Image (cartoon, rainbow, N blue to C red):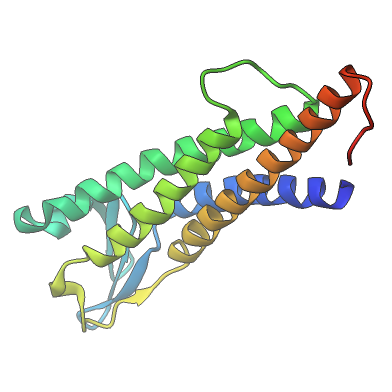
Length: 183
C-alpha cells in the first residue's frame, strides 16, 4: 500500500511540474529561419532571433487570421495547463496531509479531468499547426513532450490516488461497523 501511495503521489507531483514547465517554456517547435536566424514557438508566443537580436510576438502573428484556432487553442492549453498543475499539486498535498475536504468534486476527479483535457488540447494544438510550418525544418522542441507526458502521468496518478482514497474509506467504513478490516 505504501509503495502505491508513493507512486501515485510521485505521479501527481511530477505531472504538476512537467505540465507547468511545458506550457511556460517557449520551445514546442524550433528551427532556423533564413541563414542566420532562429525561431522558437510556444503555446502563446513566438520568438524570432536574427544575429543575436530577439523579438517576441504573440502566436497569433505567426498563425495569421486563417489559423486563429491554433493560437486560441494554444492560449487555452496555457491556462488549462497551469490550472491542472495547481490542482494536481493540491490533490497530492491534501492526500499527503490526510485531509478529505467535502467539496462538490473530489480533487482527484478534478485533477483527472483537467489532465485528460491537457492530453486532448496538446494533441489538438499539434494537429492544428499551420501547413506553412510543415517542411520548414521546424523540429519538435523540449516543451511538447513534458506537457503530454505530464498529462498522462496526471491521469494515471489521479486514478491511483482515487483508488487509494476509496480503499481507505472502505476500511474506515468497515471498522465503524465493527467488521473485519480489508486491506
